[in-house]
Image (cartoon, rainbow, N blue to C red):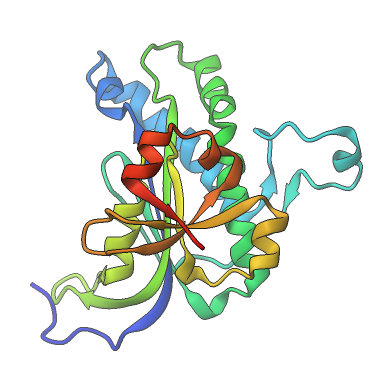
Length: 235
């Protein structure tokens, strides 16, 4: 049971990730050994994104390494984390971030997505199993959340449209696997510099015509049929 009233709404940033193919991986033998170790490897990679550290999975060139650009500085700490069975939910206070922090979060998540094979390689060195999830998908959103508190334990849960939006974005276009809401309010100049673009998601359940942020190169590589069915270019 929850306390009778929820908290006042608070502006938040929401991140949801999902591991594609996790069900097949989980159906293998001896999962009591392999699954926890695999999840810990993935969560360690996410910890580098959020809490900072040496980004081992990105192939930085020598010039970048000389500037220590493989060392991520810490981003603001989440106020809530929850395991979802095949992924995680993270929630931050929006005002804990500045615009550069938000852009850095998006760039770091993209680096993790496109280099996810390196995370898998680190795991497979110790645990040689097959059917490891080959892709990680991200949905990032912003908006209000409400905190619900359990009467007995005092633990918190969160609800809000930004969480629903994060779920929808994470699963909207599997060929992309990386979509953020434009509600994050990242400056257009920073988006363009980092090779992102804004488009309109036209079939996002519960969020008609949502402006979203995608990687420009990955979006351009989509099949024309998928683009036409799911997106509309901004004029």
